[in-house]
Length: 402
Length: 53
Image (cartoon, rainbow over all chains, first blue to last red; front, side):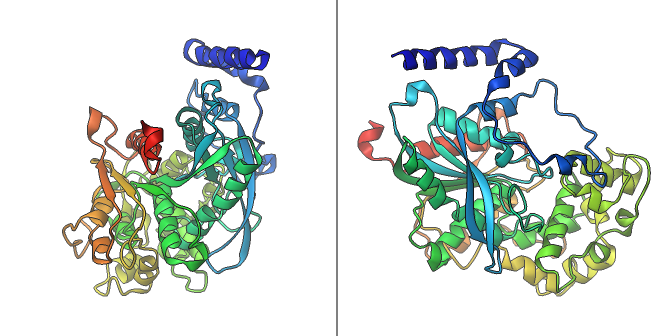
């Protein structure tokens, strides 16, 4: 009884404080909260990686909440897209409210986070907006939420960058977390109710759908439980999406995404040299600068300490002289590369086209579990036509992006 | 999904346009609504009928 009363007092007090008290007081109150680990200081302090100039929004206390929800670290074996053994990390958030503790049977939700430029904003370190959403899903919806850090983040010792929107790499890292997470559940007081869900938004939606596809097409995962998946706002028709956001002539809000993609694919397909910055990017972006908003050089911007917003500002400043001027997506790229690959008459049979089509998630398979696809009608980053077209027949893509 | 239908897909697939409530219509602001929708959808999906009553 004493334990129950203590839990009641603790939860009620925390809830009231979160609503009533200013951020600073709330931060002080939660100082004793169990921490999920700190990111390696060496990376943040590295002389080659300038610290981000953008401070967190005032009053942001999401990380405090994330640390407050009960969670366990996960380390699990997996493989990369070539079949080489890899070790990945993640975190399992557990339902903790006292009023739900009697309901011991919970489903497992595997939540795949989306684009993240900063290496420390991941579940491993209990940081980042999406870690908070995963913790909230555990707390308020009574799920056990497993969040893989994904390859290239957390305790992946390989040294390779994150394989951004690469279907096989993401699918393996997402599916291989399911059994270790269920094992951790079984070792605790919570009972698994037999359901497993996948969810992700944006690049996370792409990763979730890649995992569903792998689950249904790879015999290695045939016995893996899967009840349903919510794959939302992702570039599922990958080749066409990439072509649109690399070669589009209209202003594009997220040039950092273009850089992440090229960095990842340059690492994934090194022998081709097709995605090397020297070949694919606007040469202006490769010049080192010693001062200004865009000081440093491209590899420093992408080393994992700059936020996506800061990278966008640097790219815009380098290309236009203003950190806020939106630039057409194609301005970030090397025009010769665009003409020979994405805008070529031979598309989609160009070398780049073939590689991108390997990562299309539409065609050649069909899901055997219920799926929820969602799209935002005015989505300017992953246009709604992309997920919508993957569900219903749409107009044929234009010969050249507008 | 047309391609899925051609491949013999019989699983229920729902397309959820985020136009409800008049909020969350772009990529960033649509995310919370989409995720909340997904979590609620999971809550009911695949549960035994007696546990939903």
